[in-house]
Amino acid sequence: MEGGMFTGTNYLLARKMLDYTTLRQEALASNLANVEVAGYRRIDVSPDFQTELNKAVGSGKAEDISNLQPKLAADLTTRSTRGDGNNVEMDRELMAMNSNATDQEYVIRYLNYNFQLTRTAITSQS
Amino acid sequence: MNLMPGLESTASALDAERLRMNVVAENIANAFTTKGPGGTPYKRKIVDFESVLTAAQTPGSTQAPTSQVNVRGVVEDQTPGKLVYNPGHPDADEKGMVEMPNVEMSREMVDLIVSSRAYEANTQAARIARQMAKTALTIGNKS
Image: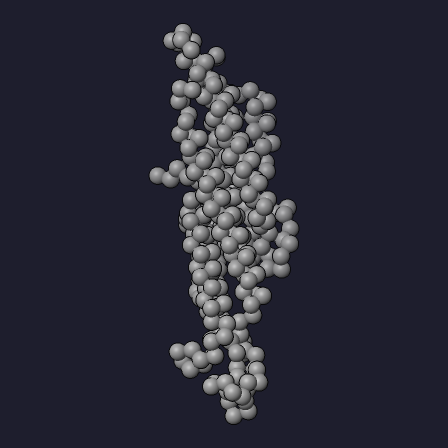
């Protein structure tokens, strides 16, 4: 592993994805909490995070990945289906929450798997 | 230290929706109360929700802030209730009309259903946040 275990692009990518899933859960919780408030507009992680992350991974430079920060932004694409301007749909938020939690679990399993491999390599015991 | 993401928003929603359910229950219980403590018929209560930011937005920040829900107040709906002809009623006026509370059962039931759904959704959010925290605590564990 070039540069050691904690500076490789895969590890940094996993860390960034954990930042992303935690931030996204905060946004989705905020949306669900305000599902009944007139005029509330839903927020989410800004969509360019995914494209920027893909670019950073493609470039192969570790600083590109670690310098990237996920940010919350108002969701401008979802239209309000209610008269009071609130554009939060309960089921959609819950589905997004479930898939977000699964993403986080996937990343953590990946990390734990890599730590386990390293542990096996160091101790030569599995 | 906050291990569970979105905890403040979720907790505020559980509080607010529970209050709303209590208010709706009070309305339903008083649907036929023609004389309240002030001598007038019961008037239905409405809960006023608003969004407040979970934390003050740092100046110059471009990030959208997260919000929690706050109960601005519980107000009485002053719409006059229906007048019903019931001359034998103790609260009937000289024409035999009784003013009933302005509580409509169908509207209150819909509010109750919506409120309890929102409450359930937020308990689900709390469950998911706790699950995420537990998963995060397994990082580095020997499997």
